[in-house]
Image 1: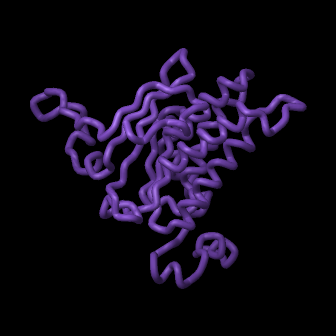
Image 2: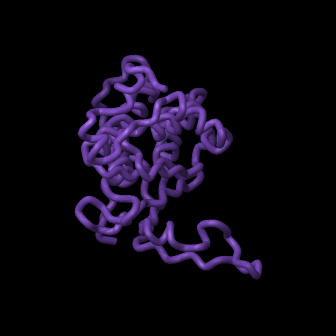
Length: 224
């Protein structure tokens, strides 16, 4: 039975519990569960989706594990690029907008506060500004306010997720967008091959984008 202090950290109000069943998972339990897939949680590009992410208790711990892999990187640009690989692999769906926004802010803050900065470097450099805008843009795309059971956003559009693919040696990402309901409902989610051993057919993305430098992600046109 949790003590009162632990209980307070797991609920915002009794009303929210009654109306939405909102109870946040304790960090101790989060890390115990992540340790069951320890190798994947410490792999930079391993993708995770939390379908009821709240304000990010699972996603923040996953991101921390991934960012820990970058601690020995000396190049600021390499660190930025690889940090976006880590962020781009973390996805969340949350029913309540205040939680979704709090989750984005937590993940953003974790990256910015972990990012190494040379001594004396001004915080308002254009390069940093572009990086932070791209980081924020990626989080807006990856953390969606919606209902994982109906596959719809809060404004009743199909939930769509971005597949961010880093292009080796170029500091660029390519992007493809897929509808969440397709990803959930198709049988190929369980296997790359059918019962006859033939490769499963994958749906075409709803959008594809040309490669773009990691600092320019936020400038990507949505009309492609």
